[in-house]
Image 1 (tube, protein in one colour):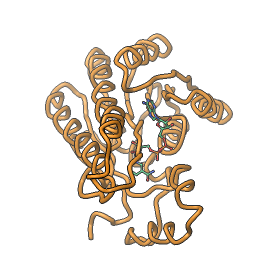
Image 2 (cartoon, rainbow, N blue to C red):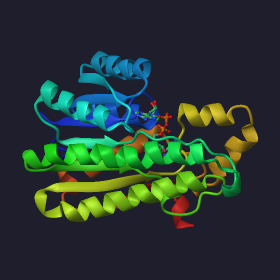
Image 3 (spheres, rainbow, N blue to C red):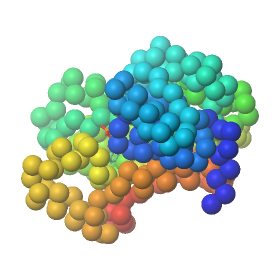
Image 4 (cartoon, rainbow, N blue to C red):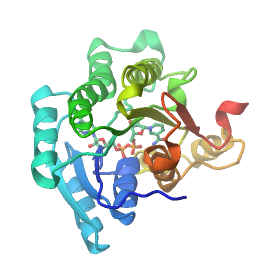
Length: 253
Ligand SMILES: NC(=O)c1ccc[n+]([C@@H]2O[C@H](COP(=O)([O-])OP(=O)(O)OC[C@H]3O[C@@H](n4cnc5c(N)ncnc54)[C@H](O)[C@@H]3O)[C@@H](O)[C@H]2O)c1
């Protein structure tokens, strides 16, 4: 594909598990130096070990994306360690509701919006000056198919992911002439530990999840990682402000 990533530096949030870990590994496989950021130190260090065992270079920074001081520290450490930042994948997110809107709580609303919306905003706020200082780069935010349409029993989550799309599109326009591209990836149901924990107990739910996708299965973390790497690479130079659904056809129905 002509990814031309050599010598570049990528930052991934929520990289201790799931989609973030797979994307950190994929960046490292392409020869990038990777900053692995997460709240979860054990998982984050495991991602770094996996990258090093494959011959790659990575370091872990503990960061709560809802805290301005943590995100400022994350960017300062990235620049101190590797001297630059080229790509950021703002992926940390939580998915904690399983009920209708009227049963939600204020604490749940604040928690979901805090990580999924404020976290992405804070990360971009601190990443953009670093990218501007070196003449450009690319940002990918993790939205969801729940950011493109309804998600019954996950209305706050759906609102948070629509907000990620709004942040993505607005930032893309603001910095389009400055060499910074900003896109969002919108996964449907992906096979992560979170999904397995929720569905192993009830195989009927797993069958239902597979059937939601016209291709007849749920997605793999590597399939999201591949989309993120594409959106970052120079072959995507004309793509900004885009929401890329990686969803087995789910949003085409
Ligand atoms: N798995 C899916 O089906 C699916 C579908 C669509 C979108 N997504 C989105 O993809 C992203 C990754 O999800 P995943 O499935 O890999 O989940 P996951 O739970 O496996 O990984 C999320 C990671 O984010 C970290 N995290 C949570 N809060 C944080 C905070 N405040 N600061 C820093 N890190 C924090 C967690 O520790 C965890 O390592 C999320 O934004 C999620 O909403 C997932």
